[in-house]
Image (cartoon, rainbow, N blue to C red; front, side):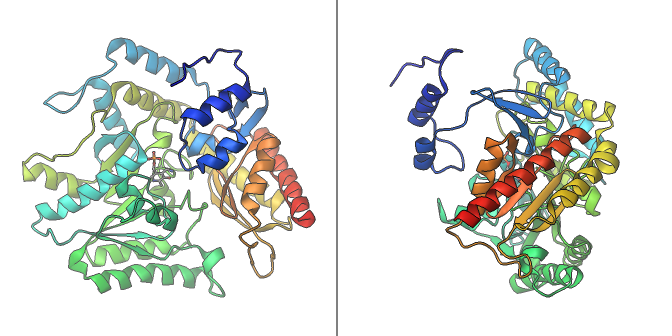
Length: 462
Ligand code: PMP
């Protein structure tokens, strides 16, 4: 064991060496990462972060799809400080509650769509997803139908990294690691028109993808299916916006077979698509939703599941203990920050800003600046999230071979040129803070174009 010797003057190389020696990173190849050395992020303001070498970087990913209200917001810092002094922790298990949890639950219920009036707290998106798995199944048990327990999800969906989340998600690499996955989960095709639609129109493809749900429900038996779960717009899968008719049809099918509809709003929630929730933008009326990330703008870890009257009333009438929860469910400091964050979103009219001003501007600037680039096959997005498909051949949509890691090449150029843009395979994804200005969008797209040019040069030199 080495003694920590970090001081403000510790060099980047020393921090990297300690990081390599003691810190296992999430979603990383630890060996390769340690050879390269981690980039050390030291401070932040607005839409920018700085690294330990003093480089200023435009954060096109809002941290990890979460710093929706931007860095350095005094209102959120004050809310945390106040709450730490007053009541830093108390649980909500044994006939107790506290005002931050009550206040936040009511506030969430006031911004969620439909009758999603009941809120259960967790600490991460993954825990919220596990809560959806258990709660939808428990609902059917209470109805006297314990066999109605199968959950249907989609290929290339991301629902977190706990055993429940990884099993429910549709990431094949995650299924293989730590296998076997949970039983009772089925996956259907994703509505990725550009990548998988072939010659079909988006409408025909949207119908075919929704039809896959009906086919699977019939294959396993409607009486055995508890719920269908999906992200309104796939995020970690590469920002994939489904064809316009997809969700209407999915919803019709769920209702027809009495299958609960769960929307994973961990990324789409809190303004990302130009509404409080992606369900509102896409016309979805879910029975239950998960949220995290933008709920507190990432300042503290907190997540929640908003439960509709149908499921909540069943739990209430059941009149028995639901044996589910976390020590930090509704943590007072995290809850106080989340409540302050929602009030800040309201007082700054951020939803309107994304819906009718900066969202459309961002989408237009991306297309005007990048659509003609030889590497860019397709750009899709909604509000302040976008996915850019990098291709070898625009006319055939052909991808680069696996040995050309085009996304990683581009991501590295971005980082070295003052922009954080994430790579998901060969797709580049963007999800900047919602407070981004027009000038900062211009800066973002100019940098993105420059980095695509550098990527193109590497490929040609290749
Ligand atoms: N669901 C979705 C849609 C997500 O994007 C994520 C995280 N990217 C999760 C769940 C899991 O959230 P967490 O990492 O907080 O566990």
